[in-house]
Length: 453
Image (cartoon, rainbow, N blue to C red; front, top):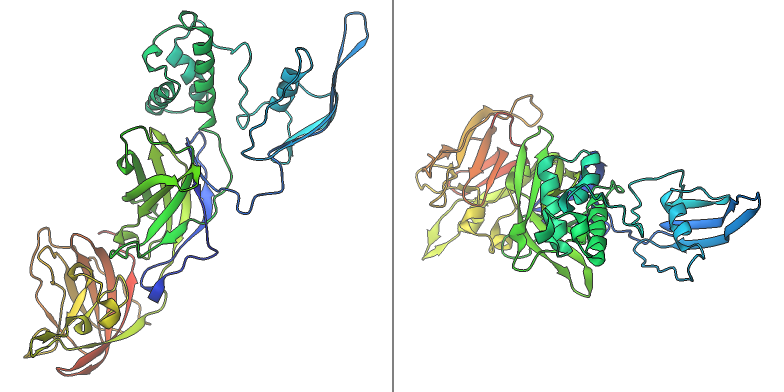
């Protein structure tokens, strides 16, 4: 399985800037990692995957003469191209493959892979020999395991991959058989399973940005769309077979929800994997994401979740019900989506974070608005955005609880920890102006979860 971060647009775009944008920056490779998050070439590179320039090879015979095996071969193979070399017995087909694999050196000319001269063997090239090269003293599963063991994969990873690749070549029931007990065709499949299992741990190139998606439904939370080559679910499997994990700069791990896994229409070799970022990663800065399928875990890829650097301003009117009409959407505000009013009609009660003017006797803010709310709010006193202060930890209630309202005071800063079934985030806001029992103007910004929570 090879997963790709693929960008179909130059920049992710979000309507109304209601959610952090996501960009990819660099990858941190782990030696021996299994399938890697990597790019599909966009646009396709002009550099061939394999190229031969003036390749010739001759041998010295026992009588001192030179035997010309290959003479002045030029060849270019594009990435993803399927190429067959056809010719009569003894014409040099295997010799040519041995040169590409780095097992032999040409008498003249050069072999290049990814525009780099081949100096010897490497795990970026897999060769299945006519003789297969299976170890007769090892069982089928142990033959498949051999290369992965040399690469340092853990026993758990090796066992998962053995099961997967033997099932892929329809040899699961022969895992504990010796190779001499198999037919010639079955031995070919063992060699194939060993080759592709080893190929899955090969290090690959840095990723391109992923696609950032929003508004897939009424739920506007940010998604990432990853695109993968050879990501094949087994019959009866669905998105639950794929897991995704994120790690922030403080080494805290988060399980991401995998919402969709499926083939891209008209491109049956390409699979799309859509994951959703949790609220806890809003304004997280650097985030490392990896995915896992059939026991294969990708390398971690570094993404930058954009941090809201400057506060924004919004005016909320006091909540009132007049002639049966509730102005709730004008009195409530969503830090997560940065919106209220008519433009936020599609939001649900779980999406709102604060409500102004819910009491007729005084001006207050309220954070408890749904039955599963465990949200908290704290008045930090008189503070300006330029002041030096630390966002305090205010743990959410362990069970749904009605948080008391807090008074709205001009010049005061407030911290909110919104926590319910759909949301878990921190935000700061400051009261800039107040028209008693009519409206309040606040400046606000979402902030990273404080350390210790």
